[in-house]
Length: 402
Length: 85
Image (tube, rainbow over all chains, first blue to last red; front, side, top):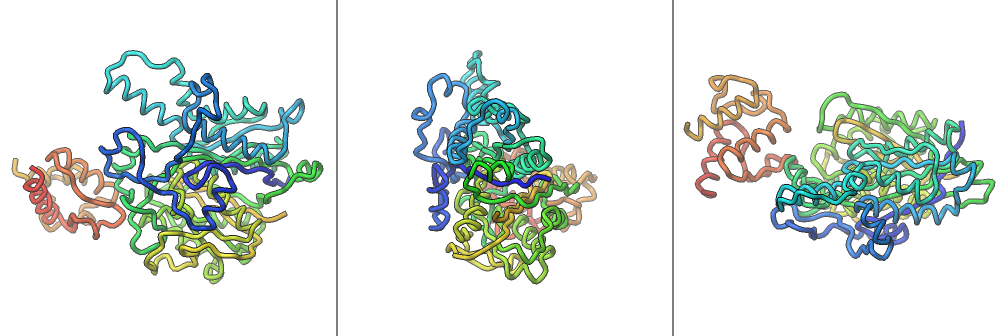
């Protein structure tokens, strides 16, 4: 089996419009959650989110591109350009055929759907723009990345709600590990911050009106975010031969299904996935120093997740650090695991553990070291990233240094 | 139909029971209504009475709306109807 390493990273999210800004904000424990700004926000009961502000797509894409790119595609391309530039890779001849793109998203071009449903239903128009379908389709972002960078190998989109990007990165990992591909562009993106997107979530009554406070006893729900996280996964020998700067190695991956409930998380399912990723990478549990939690800030997720970590790690659960960066950038749904992977890379490379901000009151059911409010310097060798989606579909990645 | 009978009908429908099986001291748990079922019942109640019910599924005990049993739910709804009409 081939080894798989990360040689490029890019992002745009509420904390920053590139990796450096985002990691800087995570070190500072800055909150990117703020009042939402879009049409009809006054008709919502949830009015906050981790929205990308100050983003000017007109400065990055031409008129023809803008007509085809939904906001989730725009985010994806901005992050992909950063990741590909860092990797230094160019895709020509044979390499382009052995390189592909697997991305996660849950809502795809939801803003495009929202705007066009409004046009036909509310405004009573009988005509929509000819590109509505190619703009809203879930695979639009993956396709545009493949076109912009000439990636001609296996390419597709994964939609598993909140685990989409972890599932996508797991697929990319498997494609390289098995020898099928040499390079994969992977990660995920989401742009659900529009009237219809938030209105739908309001219905479930799991959203917070004031803040995302994972693991805190007074947590009262999740807060949505938007953006993208994109990575270049590369076969280790290929990266080494060209002298690439290796950010981290993917050392284990597992995915499972709870097969039990459409919204409630399962301790058993979560634990089984974490154990699976350890087993896959032949990682002894004591080597894990940091976990980027799914940590949504809902009552159910956080206690279930802490229970699962305690079950898997036993007494070592008290030695490792676990934080939820959703407290800062919000929950990016299908793109969340990708943005969160940045905190895993930061932990390995820079020795900085991103905090869980908004932490106010200890909860005995979440009694782990959640790195409350302030980032911490620490040397860690193996880190993990959890994603446990609605529908009971779980995906966990483990990263190490090379 | 009285508010009480309407609410009981909605809850019975959610619980797949006859209205006569739903009593004022039945709790959602007694009736086999889980958190998702509760959120759905509250939606039906909001639609039926054209009111807005303050309820956060993350912490039902801290919401301003008492869902401990059918009786408290009905009292809460009567209160909301008088406030919001």
